[in-house]
Image (cartoon, rainbow, N blue to C red; front, side):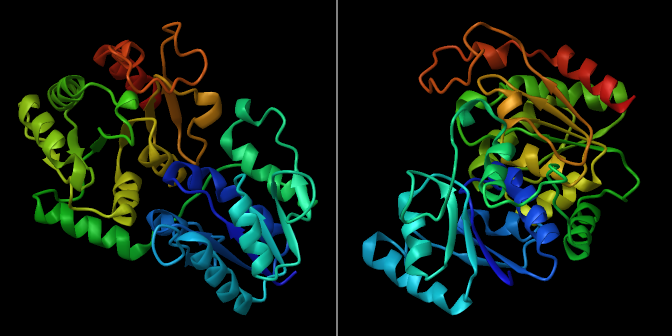
Length: 336
């Protein structure tokens, strides 16, 4: 097998969980070229995966939108002369896309038979770690999985950009930095802002650490408020780093504290030491499983014994059950 297409999942954390898929394929077929087909928002994280040779953007909300767009994208893929396609999530449209592309082997989740040639059993997958779910798609084709860890590699250029950014903000490079990732893709998973502010103050005053607050453009207002309320002048980088620079910042960090979100999995995958705050989600399903040391902090509040997606939750008690003292104690255990 010389050319392999992996049809990626759509979210940063899930892409991190899928990195063992690419490693397993490279191990099974050492001379093969492995290409990822992915939506635009996860392109950067796939480019950090050392076992991905190329990323093809599949803009299903833009150029590839609708039936006509899908057919056009499938026909364009024919030029890649792919021998096999592994479709990591259950998707009839993406299974048809692989068929339109003329790819003879098409493995994924779905009903028995056409358009898939190899169908993975999805019995019980809701209780499995997402990483192991994605690996089932290559295992059904007979690929042996020897390493299930999630790994990303940060480029030297990204590390140099981050070092330059930190120098421009007054950090010489010897400081022990703690990165507090305060955001999340939905509010139910976020730790209260006032607790991040209190944590920043105590990390600075009690442990002598430099706190950095990253984030995307949508996080700027909240991050600035956390910095202001902390009273200790943490370094605000919200809006100043892309995903590759964020990964380099995590790699440089002494410790990363984050709720369950894409960035916490990036941090773990690049080898950072991580304190992961879990409330409505379950660590056995979406917990970090990268190269770094990880401590997951969660509390049983009764309503979170299974993954909870009650977005209108009136009190978010599962996240409020995690105190600043809890995080500091976990932090001390991890660094020891």
